[in-house]
Length: 312
Image: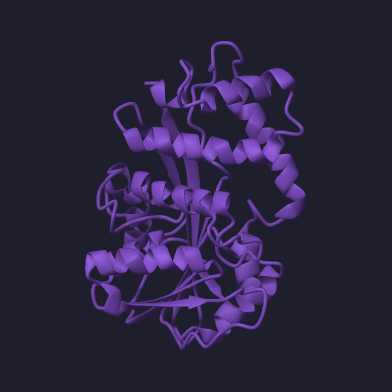
């Protein structure tokens, strides 16, 4: 773990992968789902929503650790979750700050519908307001929150600098802006898998990253200098490694399947024929090589969080 700030994390919080799967969730696969401010959303994109839900379930402990680390000076009463997806961050923040109300913003009506259903199921619907908006267009009135959270959504903004200035403008004086970003898609397979095409997963990701480098140029950016340029004081930066052994978790198998199905859609035209065939064998849930039959899966990625203060 790399921690560039004096604020300590709650020890061990990031290791409990299933702790509070329903309440603490990271919209992680937002990277996968292009959720949030991204205008390419398709309502009814169940594939994206499923990845977001699985990411939230599998990586719940990690998002709880990040919310625990946030250097808040007083507990926020009003929080905005920008690019909320199906609610991973929203529910983690509601759990972390039991008195707070969250305004959850996303461009996808489908994702917001799922989020509201979860809020009702958890009995917190009175603490959640959903707002459908494309943040590359005019911003709705989001009040003056003490905390703004943007997880894997900032890199989808057409003009991130504009979005950072917008956040600075709405934050209450002294308020905190948390930017969480991911190192691309998680890896699931061992390096020497599958047996007939070792290294297949990494080759898929290299191809996918090349395709997305043009479409999403700010993925993987260092947000610290951009936050400073927008008027914030960066109070902490932390990288949280994710390495969850998945052999006993059925959710990890479904997460791997959903993620690699999405990667296949992206790279099918550029992958070598032998690699595409091997990938299809992994994705054939009824076949002998199905990824769901493997007992050697893990979830490996990392998240970086920047905590930036608006001056009083």
